Image (cartoon, rainbow, N blue to C red; front, top):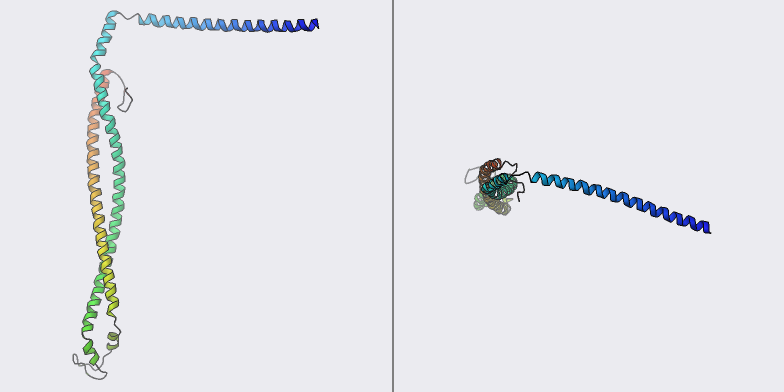
Length: 244
């Protein structure tokens, strides 16, 4: 038992000694890092202190002299960036309006073709209705025509068209005429509305393109000023960079 106790105490002493050794090693490393940091700090201080009073005064004077240039740079940044954003928005709008204009033109051309076809059908049916109306006015004379008897108009004793005339139904073609008139009228109104929409799109597109062209010219002039100012300041910056 006493031997076991001595072993336990010896193990504890060894652990304490190992911990103390590790702590001393960490302390030595920290001291080295501290010494290295102090050396760097002393070097920086020495460099800073190498500026003479005249050099400090010159640097301050240059800083003050360049203040208007820096202020001008901020002003240019405030002008160029919003213009770039507006121009980007305009380009998207122009693309969308151009696409819509193309689609409306296709629709208008198709509507014109339908209008042309329906107008021709209307003219044909109108001619038929007029012919039927004239034939209808001769109904009394047709009723007097008898087979083998001469026609009072032409003298013919043959009347092959009498049955065909009797089979005519003017009301059918008249209904077609009214339906076609309504279709042609509706197509004309829709076409006029579509042309109005196209005119509005064309005017909007022209306005947007004019504004975009003006923005490009302004941006080009402002960018040239930006480049001149950054060259005077001996710095490299783009108008879209954050200058705050």
